[in-house]
Length: 385
Image 1: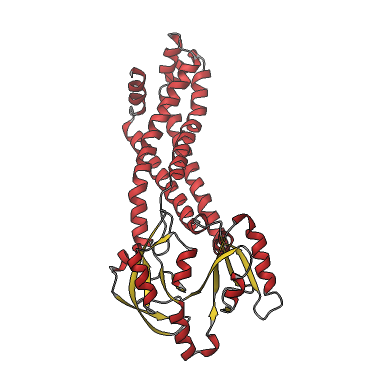
Image 2: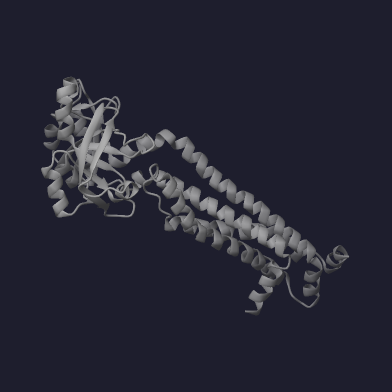
């Protein structure tokens, strides 16, 4: 306890300098935590991918569709349990600012393939009965104040026109990393209207969601599916859900790499600031360390004293930074939730914050403690004068 009081008194002897250093440390840890959370949020879809799901799409590009007749052929492949077709709809609610993911899917099979989207039995029945029914995530419902029974109109972009829906179900995610901000509706509703307006685009699916029995056979099953449609007018590319998600993330990999580098640069900068603070502190008290040596205290004691002082400052700043990360992340999510539907401060991020603070404390104290521990008593007293 006496040692702790001594460390605190030493750390706050020059109050303004110490408070400014703590403030810098707080900002650095806060920035580091938020940047790491942004990276985690960007990869959330990849991390949430299930090992027992495959995605089949056109081998050329997602822009090109596949005949709906492929569904039954895929389902006949050994090891495939269920297949659901889907289309990216890209509808707009009132304004382009109100972006959210919306898909046309087959609700019955889609909910079997994605059991993490949880609906009540009553809502599920209502969705299956109503051709114009829509299912939305609870976060999307909170965002727009929607509730079951509300009418919603989306303006089509890929499929032009106004599309009317009635919300029949609001799903919740089974896990914290489940995206609860999506909008799903009946693929049949889309297809029936397309038959009337653009017959050549009817009976087409953008992709197929596939549930398999054995994740260890994923590669084998994917190859078999693609071999069925080889040399056809619409060849397929089947890959794991994780690989499918990584295909989107890889488009912005350079940006994510830059963000990760910036997060580490922030720590390096505060490390330099902290090292300067400790160097100034040690230089000012070199005479005191000489007195300690005169009284018989060795280099290890001097080193522990300086290192402890460094830890006091970084711990104070790091703790504040960690505490502020949660409200800051909440604000960030409220403002940019449509782009980052899953924005969670992970425990691993907090561990990285703590690790960064420890590294800063140790590195900042290395050179000053070495100088104080090795300088001779005469030289230390001479510098004081």
